[in-house]
Length: 276
Image (cartoon, rainbow, N blue to C red; front, side):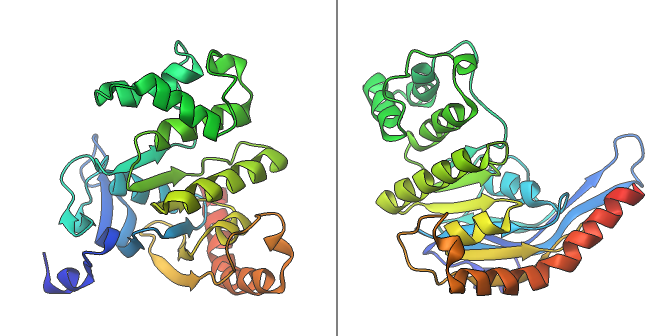
């Protein structure tokens, strides 16, 4: 690793991406290459909530997969609490955009799955406790198809948090929900995060959501070769209600400042989609 990358790795940071690039090569033609992200460096401190925003197709999910150890970067490095990441990030829990629940298992047994895999003796009791924490204590015997979209998201959240990960990776987890359910879920996540202060890397298209929830917002450029073009500290007081905080003057100031950086990249990404 280059000396400049070493300097970026802080032992107290939960997650460090240093000079990360991801280039994909076509199986049918080795000359066809696509660089999703290039020279991306970002950190998430222990207990910090960081959101990444950017245009559609700018490589946000690619970065999350790199942080999870599901994708090895073409160049650059990933460190977890100061240690190089090799293989799957065992200290991270990943909440996907789409439902990851097993349809043949009840809500309770879905939450139990990871605990059972790790050999936890009281897996059923812990799973039940987590369902209660997310407001589903009376729904443990329901199958995913018997749950509403918001209930399935709550179950997925319980499933992710039950293993008590040090880092939580979230890929647009609430994008498919109606606005009321979405705000309820956002507040639930903030309450659970405040209780244990895990490191969170949160991917979203929604700038309002990013500002309302985060300590820091990182803005990515339009792809290909997407890279950070702005970083903003969110100095809104906590605890926060995501609906109420949107009406405050400081929120409006932050939104304008970030949107001034993001606007042209969103338009660029839109033009690329039309030309495709």
